[in-house]
Image (cartoon, rainbow, N blue to C red; front, top):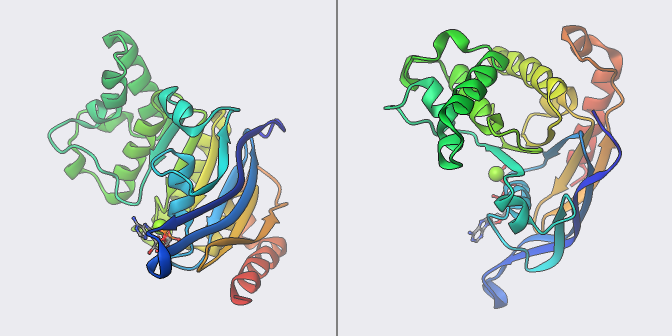
Length: 257
Ligand SMILES: Nc1ncnc2c1ncn2[C@@H]1O[C@H](COP(=O)(O)OP(=O)(O)OP(=O)(O)O)[C@@H](O)[C@H]1O
Ligand SMILES: [Mg+2]
């Protein structure tokens, strides 16, 4: 739940690739403060810098200008402190490892004792509803199940921030909606702050406490829309008038570009 303390502060951040006339202004003076426990979605046309912003927060890229603070630290330190879990569009699982051993991988790298690895993996598999599939191989699972394994793995070491880049983009509509419910249920059972990139307006509105609408070339924040739908969100949420009003509001601000 949102506890009001800023956990990620993006302050006037620009990112330029290359230099001179051929340089690409991927992000221009982006500022955004995210509170602990929030669920924030980034939405905007292809190439507007959503993935770049996520990568800057994750310390996978360095800003050209401006600064980022994560839990009051530079992103480098936050990465060393294992404050992040990451989930991408493709789940990137290891086919020769069982589901459970995929979930345990970060714990092995971090040298958790075997008993603790075992306990955490079981806990996470239960959380994502895959306890019965612990001994399966990833290729024996559906796309949605594989993505759940990736989420379990990202949460296995209890990161305070979960960064997700179009995690459900490759799934069909109904599976995606089911994954949305599951993600919110996981989020409400953990103390994780989620930053979520998506192309889907209904998905962003359904999940988020705020939707950040971005514009392309150079990538900027156009508008931040608070989502005042009550929680827990459910099947009924998708049928409320307010849900459609918010979808329209996001769509209008995307159209204005
Ligand atoms: N390594 C790089 N070198 C040069 N330009 C890059 C690099 N990475 C990204 N860019 C440029 O930065 C801009 C933003 O890229 P980014 O991947 O963040 O877009 P996005 O909003 O995630 O798009 P999509 O929705 O298609 O994933 C794009 O114009 C892209 O060409
Ligand atoms: Mg992207």
